[in-house]
Length: 141
Length: 141
Length: 141
Length: 141
Image (tube, rainbow over all chains, first blue to last red; front, side):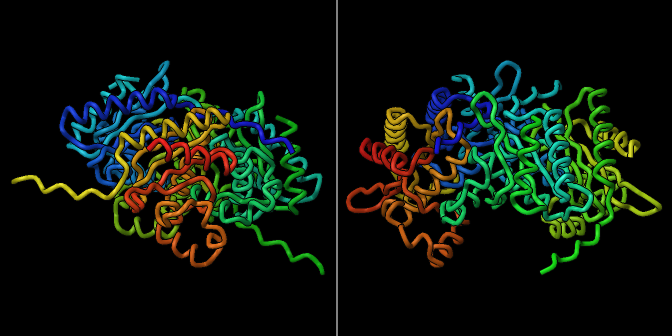
């Protein structure tokens, strides 16, 4: 039996560039003196790469992913979800992704040729610090 | 505020060709004298189009989707999952997609340029009839 | 052994007319320049037919279904759920259907001989656009 | 108000050494010509770092984590779970971690000073390839 054909690829940042982005996020976190988890997701909201710094709690892992998920699915910074995050509509939407979205500051979309291809998000510091680390990662992409 | 950028597209059959495929599946089902649901999914396992014939039970909807999901994610006919479907490994895998996969005959992958871009699956008849309808749809793509 | 008797049919639009309705919804979406998913459900809230346009996100699939579900179960436009959507009563009701209802504008009930037999709902544009597409579909039924 | 004290650290490989391990796993995967996801977890089963290669499916992410989870919690290679994986006991245990354990070959525990401090697991190739990549990562720790 021949092996099945490979699957077509969901749009995403490459692993190599995602790792560079996460290195930049971690460097920014160290500069700020905080311990974060940061995650890069593809456009469908699936993980490409994730790091958790040595002093960061396990909770920061799912929070970093959840912020990046919000950002990837809405195509905007997770901080911009604002009032929508408290609406029944957001609750419904979140239920459709097993309530994994975290509508809080700390993630930004990754855009290439005018199309969202994923997002990078961080958690573990104050929300503006999380966003600063995510933006440092984005800048390195 | 300007609107967020559009998201890059997950590989998939177009809606137009998916509808043609489903029309062919329904025609084949009528020819066989059975009432089916049939579904076309993208490579990530999300719906592109679905039809339920007038005498088909609601259960056939999730079964058609579940067979197509198995086929899209494994890149092979759902009938070929065979022994794997009874393994703890399959159970684990299925848990990671909320147990929505249905490892039973009736779905085939959609391949383009040697890459899987989705799947079409049917439910409501005997398993070989479901597969025959799915294959009729595939042939129309 | 003779085969078991067929099940009685839950009231619903036929597949043929549901497809016509969805074609009209898609045409209206194109006219407005938006990419939507649209779904037709029966009176029990189960899918009859669903389409996702080529540029619509996977999220629009469950949102279109969820709006149509709200509309079918309440027998009114999903936009009319208004304040009820934020009430603990709605949350309880929604829990009983696995939180699949989406109480947001974009779906209208399908009525025949003074009885609700289903609903049609759309998602992917601004809420009034979603409703306009759903109504275009309803008009084609 | 002074900030709350920091939490004690759950035993784990450092982020820096986890990244080195994952680089080695990816190098071994490239050598074998397969596309994998690989994950390093701490002793509690929480992620320290994860990478998904450019052609690996989203499913490999949860499978790599799930194998590493089995390995970290049992303190043995996931291949050694053998018959236990099919037992009702394993099913119960797995239910207590939301069925996230994947009892299949591809992960090995990380031991330091005779104590398990985590695990590394891979998914995406044949099971022996997954394990070979995990072991290459372990050797780099």
